[in-house]
Image (cartoon, rainbow, N blue to C red; front, side):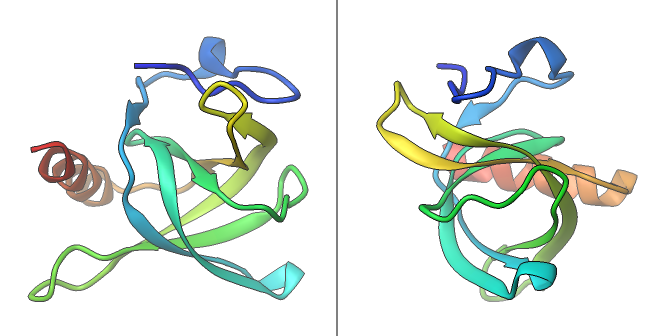
Length: 120
């Protein structure tokens, strides 16, 4: 697993959960910036993600992300905040790092299950 490399810092020393390289489709909405986007994660953990985007958002910007959990399940919608903008994957992909906020135990369990299913 490669750590995300950004223009500002790696952030690896601040992470409490390892991020897994996994591409999961998400919808990201930043209402304060009139911005909505369908994208993919570059890496993901139960506490945050690096999301592919060419449009950086300011650090601290609140966002909502929605993960599709399958046709028979409701999407998993999580509040998050931008913690950095920059590059990942050896400088090949531009995006934003987000940290999930106010994550319930159930949200964390559902997200862990989504990560596990995406890797198998």
